[in-house]
Image 1 (cartoon, rainbow, N blue to C red):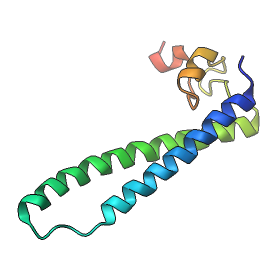
Image 2 (image 1 turned 135 degrees about the vertical axis):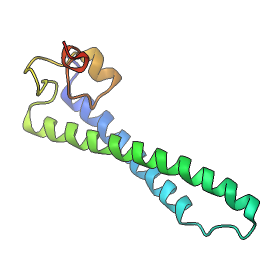
Image 3 (image 1 turned 45 degrees about the vertical axis):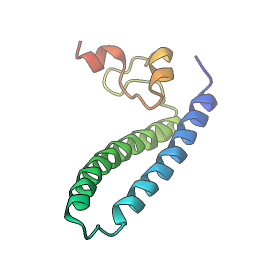
Image 4 (image 1 turned 30 degrees about the vertical axis):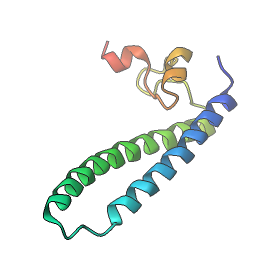
Length: 107
């Protein structure tokens, strides 16, 4: 399996990236609304999209923090539901994945 420190490096880099993106989203959402009604309508649509991206980013950030905690505890790569291994291929694709393939499918 890929070294745990490699996964930690990937997770920490993604965390920094997400935190920066979330700050930019927050800054964009804090900008004052336009006085022009047609521009305001476009801004509202943009704000809704940014809020959705912010929620998704926050959820991913929580998953990354949980994966980093599993690394600290020595349980990274072990499915909390069945106790089996989370495959290296799955962890390479989604480094913060907690569940193994069988548990994610419900089998």
